Amino acid sequence: MSQRTVVSDRAVLLHLRLMRADATITIEPGSHVDLHLTGTLIRQYSLVDASPEEGVISVCVQKEDLGRGASRHVHDNVGVGDRLHISPPRNTFALKSGASRSFLLAGGVGITPLVSMAESLHRSASAFELHAYAPRAASLPLLEQLRSGSFAASVFPHFSDEGDSFRESGPRGLLEPTADGMIYACGPEGFIALARERALEYGWRDDQFVTERFSSAAPPRSSADGAFTVVAASTGQAMRVEATESIASVLERHGYETYRSCGQGVCGSCIVPVLAGVPDHRDHVQSEREHATHSQINVCCSRSLTAELTLDI
Image (cartoon, rainbow, N blue to C red; front, side):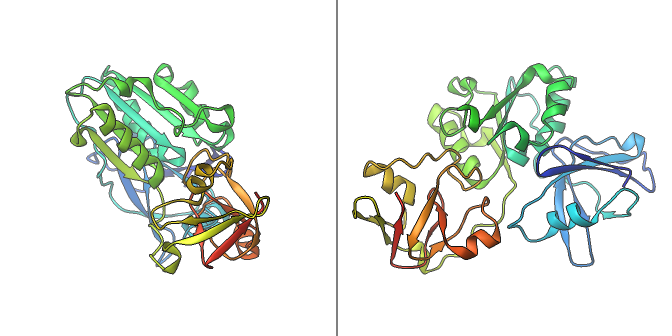
């Protein structure tokens, strides 16, 4: 590795110099590589800005405290001068040719494959908009590069702490679908699901919506996926949460404010203190130590391991 650059409060950009520059290598926008960190620790990372002619490729790694260990290994153990084995580039998130206009939608670290796609669209003088969503400016990887790059005029950052969240509103251009336009979305599962739902609602066809996800697999189903009861300590009101509902939606339906923003457990705006019961934590905000205390819960995504959960609300 030739260089390591901090690009957000949790992400680093690794510039990997190829040991054997291969003039025949072809890297398409949206491509990724397998990064072999140890004998058994192998993860896939999108290429941010691929420059094989210079013998350098770049990947962005965001530290996930609740992940499977790869990102923590990179942040804690990989430094300049280290040798890493990578696979040949592969592309499962390719740009479609001939689109009259493209919308690139990024949720957090989902920005990484979209940067190379934006660069390609800019070079070909194709019409596009890149919309990047994050809880705050410091948490959006590559923001400085996006704002200073050659395609900066087509970049639109959105931050929840400024009242501009994807859940509240999406790009206005999506309201006017075209027969030959395309939408590319990358980010957490909830972000992609909401983007697809809106696109179809606005009249886009399903084949015009292309995705790549950057999130852990959905948790295995358990008894916690069934119905349970939440109790508001301030009123004593008991409310049933069905298997298909979130705690937040039930609370809001009964008149309680939850202040949720992302709706998928990545921003922390909906955390509520727990007074009794054991939460089933499904967020990506709280640390393992915080989860172990069972003292608070993200009501947008988490559930309950006990039949009743009393909240300080």
